[in-house]
Length: 79
Image (cartoon, rainbow, N blue to C red; front, side, top):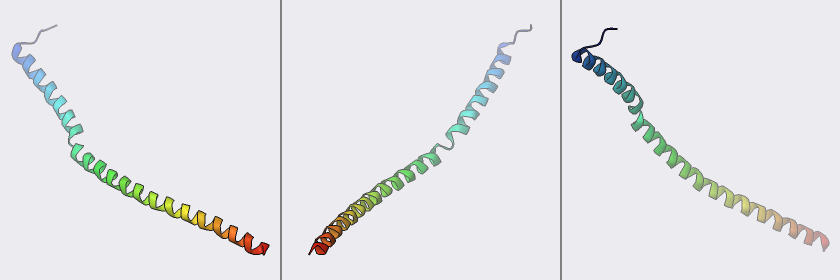
């Protein structure tokens, strides 16, 4: 087996490092876009949470009104 000279080793190492840096760059280049998407999702989730609180309050109110309505009907039928 033939051993490599220092210059050849440096060249091979440079190629390996360039390939690894390229692979890292491919992974990292989408981070700003992903970060923006995550931010947008957080805003959407916050809005959905707020909307769900309103829906829950409305459903609770309708349920109370229905129970009160039934109670009043039973009372009227008893008279």
